[in-house]
Length: 130
Image 1 (cartoon, rainbow, N blue to C red):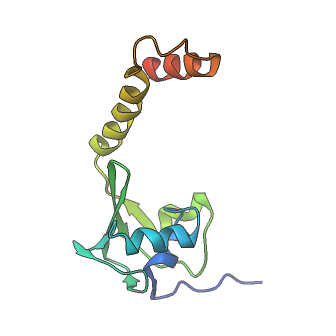
Image 2: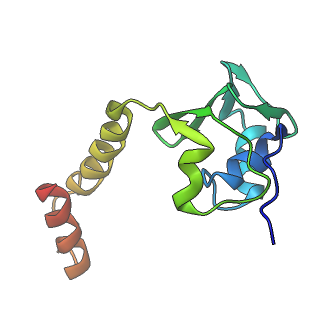
């Protein structure tokens, strides 16, 4: 049994799902419709075709991930193979911004709103250590 050859182009929503940016294809479609996905700095619809060499920007929360399309997979690929189909160009500051927001969320507790649960304390300790 041989592997199918990589496609030259594929739908944007299918590509985002195949390279594991989104957990489901419908989430990828919804993100495209909401305007959270751009190709070469242009808003993109879910049916737009993605080709190698293009740059895809995906806004997920406070992070805007930038991905370079290396190749178009024929189907969803395993996590280990994602690097053969796209390159992560997102600056580390973007991921740091998301981490800071998570820390602020847990530290911005209203005074007197109750004692943190054991799970909350462990999570706060984990966030403060890293």
